[in-house]
Image (cartoon, rainbow, N blue to C red; front, side):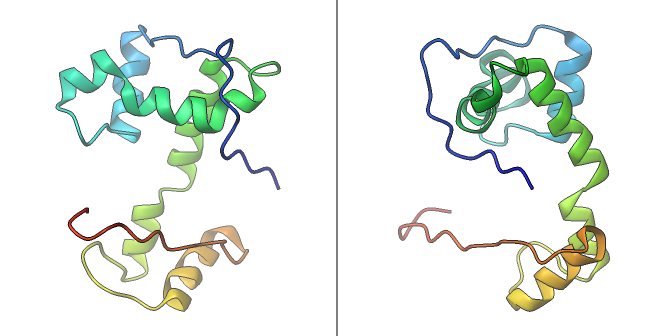
Length: 125
């Protein structure tokens, strides 16, 4: 399995603003920038920039930025995690046992997922 996480950000591996209108619409549909309104998200692209630099820039010598986002959208279409969880009776806003969440994901992956909780400081959501 391949894991891309916490790539060392190199100034040479800079993010190129996405200008292709069709790609922007497709990307926003699958990976919305929830902290910004639609137009600010499309113009600023802060989330996509951050995610590419943190997870996608590791392979920049082999794959272009467009390949990273194309793969992200393809995987989202193939493995819609929220849909998978909902189909297994797990909905946002409720509490579930880890085993139930793992079982739901295993229905499509065939593998036990590696999940971890991230605790946020009080007052942060």
